Amino acid sequence: MPNSDQPTAQRTREILVGRLLLLVFGFGVLSFLVAIDHPDWFAIRPATGTSVAMANAAAPVNSEDPATR
Image (cartoon, rainbow, N blue to C red; front, side, top):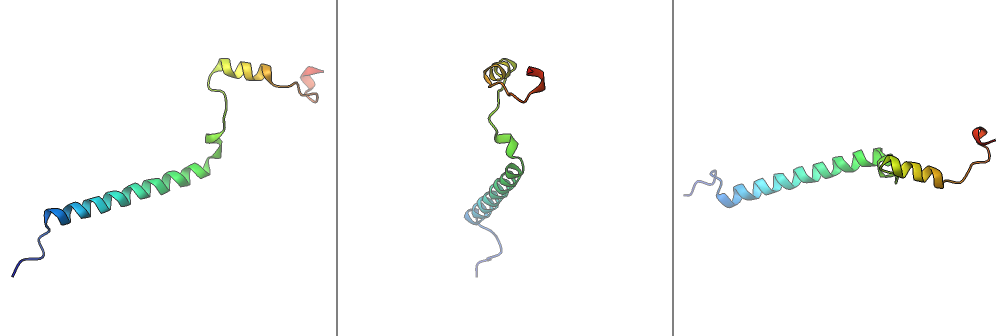
């Protein structure tokens, strides 16, 4: 009568892969939940000071801005 309590190498590998997949799924869900809480992370904005200055220079002049009157 074989001892069925001792795990074989294949069974150990299946358990390890299953736990690893569950961990990856958990990290994926966590990163999704964090990402949907911070939509400003995905806004397109200038990355450098030069590009900020060029974006401000190219922006249309707002007629309600008191500084331009």
